Image (cartoon, rainbow, N blue to C red; front, top):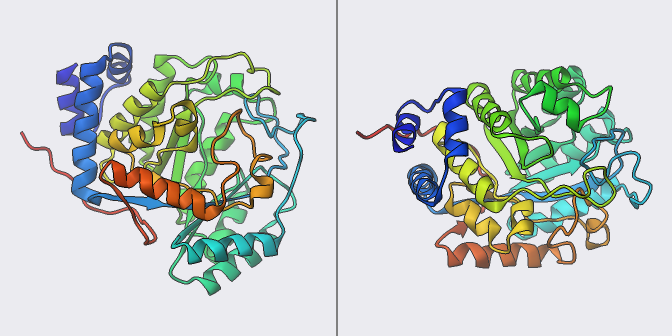
Amino acid sequence: MMQLIEKLKRKRSLDIEEYQRLIDERDEETASVLAAEAKKICDEIYGDEVYTRGLIEISNICKNDCYYCGIRRSNRNCVRYRLSRDEILECAAEGYELGFRTFVLQGGEDPFFTDQVLEDIIGQMKSSYPDCAVTLSLGERPDESYRRLRRAGADRYLLRHETADREHYRKLHPEPMSFDIRMKCLHSLKDAGYQVGCGFMVGSPYQTSLTLAKDLKFIEEFSPDMCGIGPFIPHRDTQFRNEPAGTCELTCFLLSIIRLIKPNILLPSTTALGTVDPAGREKGILAGANVVMPNLSPVSVRKKYELYDNKICTGEESAQCRGCLEDRMNIIGRRLSVDRGDIKTAEVKYDR
């Protein structure tokens, strides 16, 4: 196992079978060594800074029916909402006053948010806050849509691939959703000039150590700027309601591996991680993550954006979310950054 870690440090690459072995044979010692190496690498590139992204959940209306998701189209118990243009801009204004310099517009694949609607919102945000980055996380769209939104000023795009295994993807999504389309979208986003983020759920139904190894190999080969991973948490109104949640332990282990694969990658320590473990976000940072995403959405809608059960921070005001995370990061020797938080080009050399 230690030889595999040394190889990963040196080459930033393993075979799929080697990634699988790391996962299957992991123990506390292996996890501790990986986390220490990941944290050291992250410190060399990003210091003690943790980048913050102001999350604005703009709509829980979605045309898709993903089997694991609480806002899936067929969930009749979901109380739907859609933020107006002015409400989104108000969230950004409040976030800017709180020190945020990156805003993430996230939502279901809501047909209301056409290119024209989003171009107006993005343009206004970039005009009002030229020192800020705008990140979109709005699912699959046509190539031309990605290009239009990039020209409007969007800087980054987050699109979780969910799994790099075609058969596994089919088990998590209904027709006509397609593994090939998801992969095509990710490559289209790169071609359009975005900083691109992918990601997957840890512990999702039907997932194996082999499918996780394929995810790691995909991240190695695709080389995203960002990668969002978090534990799978079941939602009561899905067919996976009785499935066990993913663990903080395995999620942190994989965060450390991803940091070694791409030393300068932007890695969030997610809300889902904090949901399965009260200290989950801190553990994620200490395992090599360097991004947190406090919620700027209006409190009135936060409980409605329920991708999974028991999501934390749904009753907190924006300032409370930021203040809470700042305190948590300070306790573990980290500080929240107040800049855009772009990926750095620094590379860590392997030291024999």
